[in-house]
Image (cartoon, rainbow, N blue to C red; front, side, top):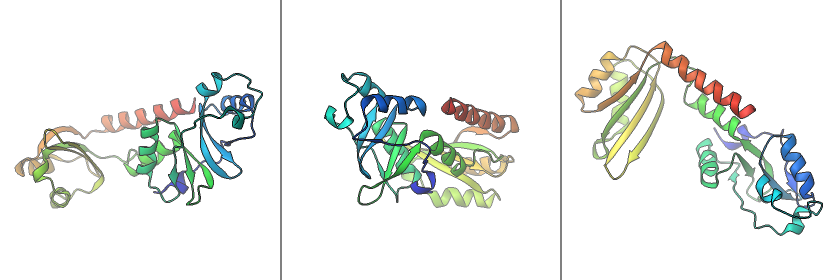
Length: 220
């Protein structure tokens, strides 16, 4: 899933000609604390609510403030993981999207990004979640997939976290089945440490509930 499919056009950008007062009104109207700033159609920087509040003469244009605005962005070929990385790196809740000429195309909100990520990770699909660990030197994606396939399980979602200092890979699998006794035994036979198993309807419903609660929070 790439950036253009996540773009929201419901939140307007600011322009250099806008006044500080207009910027505050726009942020309050759309319940955001950060907005991209354009020079014509070109993306030039990022303005926050706190920066505007700290300024004098809010009747002046944004351009007149001569702010050193950061420029978080992703290009229109970026994957959702690139969008999430940009949001974390710049500590922002909306990520501007531009083309190769830095023409502004729109922004991606935290809500739309989380919704898309949940779809990619099959949050709403029933199935077990396994948490595994194995030494980094023994890690093989193809081997994990083969073990699952041998037990007639389909991996719906797969992600890893590498603990470099310990040389350990943490693996989280979302599966299409809740019957994982045989699969767990197979992983243990191949010396994977099974750290946690979430495989009942209650856990799945709790995950969905937490996701829905987060979406309600982001919409407040």
